[in-house]
Length: 349
Image 1 (cartoon, rainbow, N blue to C red):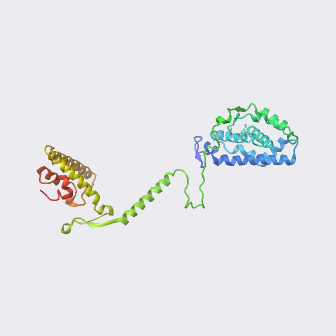
Image 2 (tube, helix red, strand yellow; image 1 turned 120 degrees about the vertical axis):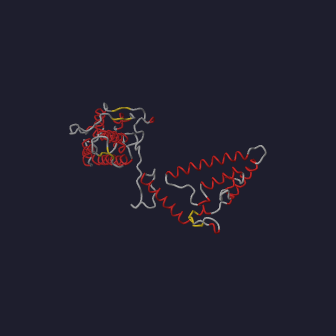
Image 3 (cartoon, rainbow, N blue to C red; image 1 turned 90 degrees about the vertical axis):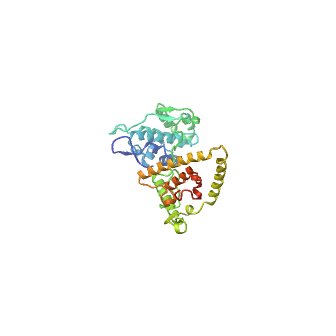
């Protein structure tokens, strides 16, 4: 989990609260708590001490738990840290654990709650309530009625009596009253591999840097493909050639199927325009004039920006040819704009 600036003091860098509810913290914290409880249970079984709570304090100190409260100092992050740690201890107080581990979890919760620094400078944020969503912990002393566990009973009763005022009883765990609902709430996925990362795909959404790199790679691949597939050919036929032009292979090849479909649709349109009383000639002239006006507007805008529209083919393309084809429509000496494919507008009328 990366460090991120807090909204607290200027220039400070602190761990955000979300870190303490994520798998990056919760999983190792659970392992540490389990190790503490397991170590105490093994020592209790071996030593059978008359002062079991003293044994727990020795185990607590030997594993370095005396420094746990100095892990984080920011108040907002510390609130999340304290609640998550106490929740982990209460998880081990359920009926699924052995009685010794349940008592050890009770001792750990008591130690964690009561060792919060109260006279530090600056003052550290502390909590006084422990959220629990189950009542079997109050019945814990009743399970310590066997000879091997009888020395734990008075200590468990005393610790419970000290904690009963701090317990904040929540509804049953079936309705998930805790916040967050489950731990860990955030799952941190670590990258796998030998450090190079080659051949491995990181799960999750791409970062801005990765998106930018991917876009650049795609652009380079497209440019290389265009370079491999472009062709250079002459404009015009025979002696009327006016130079060469380099185009992509798809643009240099004649679109046979598209041209055939266009000619079929055009023949149907000619048939409709040629019907008596259809007013085909007037409609064609109005359409031609509208196209010319639009082309002139496009040419003006392009000229204002230093560009040229359809000028790479000389007189065979561009606004001049469209105007000549439209003039042929008006004089009824040709097919006009509908005959561009047949050479309309190539020569002055």
